[in-house]
Length: 278
Ligand SMILES: C[S@@+](CC[C@H](N)C(=O)[O-])C[C@H]1O[C@@H](n2cnc3c(N)ncnc32)[C@H](O)[C@@H]1O
Image (tube, rainbow, N blue to C red; front, side):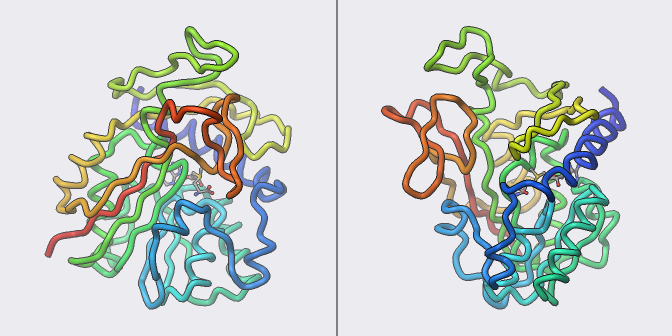
């Protein structure tokens, strides 16, 4: 898998998915239009007070969380994504709801030190959540992008699918009706090509550019990359629930999150805060 293969396949996929998401009820901007976009319950409980902070939102997609952070009083929010249609959608949302201190720029997240040299050390918080590093082949380069953006003492907030959950799939080897089976070995570092014309936003629309390349980053790789980029772990939480249904055995809880019906068999999400050293 060459550098361009993963990027070209994933970009074509995201360029096609973005308009599908803009039509999808999953991305509901009604709360943003009313002045306070929703964050999912895990992020809402952990993110803390963002008022007055300069924030970068990496892999911002449609900008809904970027705008939600701006609507919580952030001094400035800079959204970054490699998809031109996502950036255009995010700019349109911010303009529509009057989120004036919100900007969006086109960049591969791995190339941020080169594409955004003027943003070096200017930000209090880097925010990235749900469906991010799994698209990236190089977790150490990702961590260097995060460190590039933060001022000393600034923090990364990260929340995403737990890599242990990414090992499994309902159609994986050995799956049963009530139990997912093996899909990706936890320690596999190479990218995997998947061909899936469906889309998680549930519209039923079929994606033509259906081949993607994704990467499983073990917890130790994420923490090691952040440490080597100069960030110190403040805390790390593992969660038995997610904002979406990944396995058919999951059930929805009172918060609208998807967890396990009886025993918390697998961690489903991981979140952490890490601080850039001076
Ligand atoms: C699942 S979405 C981001 C999650 C966001 N929290 C959401 O739910 O809308 C993934 C985003 O990552 C972006 N992306 C994927 N690979 C990227 C890369 N190498 N550099 C920058 N953005 C990338 C895609 O364009 C897409 O907008």
